[in-house]
Image (cartoon, rainbow, N blue to C red; front, side):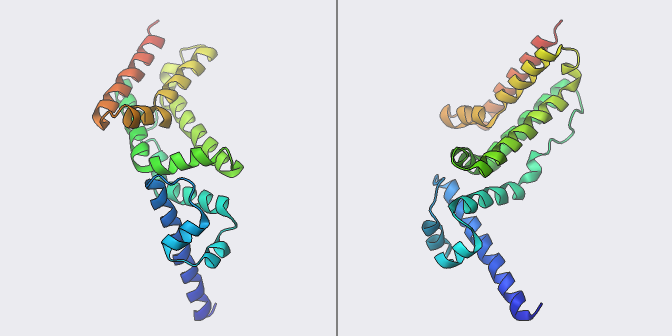
Length: 200
């Protein structure tokens, strides 16, 4: 590849990143459906170039969401999966979900809003939900193993729902609870669920 071609590729990469970073900034500001024209004007990349890099608005937003998830994707890994005492595992799960909300809330809001119009973004949302639900099942396998199949599903689903993005939005944003109060509420709730389900 010639130096000229290398330069074009590097410029294209820089411009694409600038565009995707701009979309993320707009998500943070509460604009979850920015137009290509808005993004181009704010990023300083020409409208023509933006359309050269991205097929359409859906492609632009989908890739912006993907990029942000990749940047902080390690937060989706639940450290020490299934390890430690029940108390430690509850705290580990709650801390992970709080971190995800803290670092990815604007992106997740945008993804959820756009998922009804975009099958590809809807797939992204479903895949992440499935990953987190599977983590809950694996993380509390010891407690779930003593229950019948129906009860296992109920308990795992309830724990996942309690620690879901929607629950965190309700507690942190709508109710205005601090991170520490939210953490305490979720730890208490998940612990109570596990204690009640495995009491017998």
